[in-house]
Image (cartoon, rainbow, N blue to C red; front, side, top):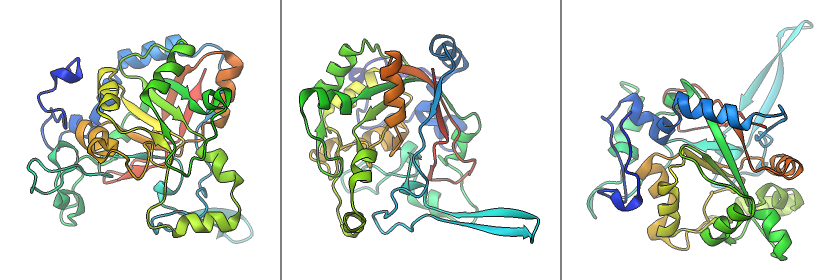
Length: 323
């Protein structure tokens, strides 16, 4: 595995790092390639101590009134042999609930100011949308081959805010600053390791459960909804690179504050399209936070199995944290 520049300042192009051949499996993994057998084994040895576990998947039907014109979740139970046995039929958009944004999800600026937008690795629009042949470049199927496993770290901003008397509306442009993230890490004695999976709790699921049905429908009707999340700054991009996270995730709708307050440092552009760092959104982190508080530790082993769809753009995480 090709190593990566140790520091953000060492990057020859700070907007993108595309070291592998186009169409290769290594390219398809993005930063998940940091999850080597050695890294995973070390995480299992150090983090699995008492066997307590919790799943990080929100209900599939949430958000039950999805935005951006996405089709709502549908589930039917049907006879496969009448009077004897049932089958399920599921119809859903993975972006409606807990999901990994795959490398095909979000493009970034082109190589020149007037050039076409590009996905990770320099992938072009026609390489994703072509129907003959069906291309698999940077499809989420690359992640499904061995899954996502390693050490998770939780930055529990909700608990921090409650102690500080800070009110959070996760459906607003409430911004979590890097300084707050670093403060929480210090208070919880978190030391980041290469290959860590970074989790940030901002309280979206708690906000959503408090809404009335009319308020949820009003959210869906917005052309540009507002979402809480981490700030967009060069300092955050540098923090993500220098710590060599293999993936990042949150219970927020967009991970980062949206609409972007600092579009130049849009994290989907830099992390997903630029560096190949998976972004998880709308993970269910309430029970995880409770277990972290109970055990007095904020690191754990994570296992996630994305859908094995070669051309996939996104996937439910099918994610578990084990202590």
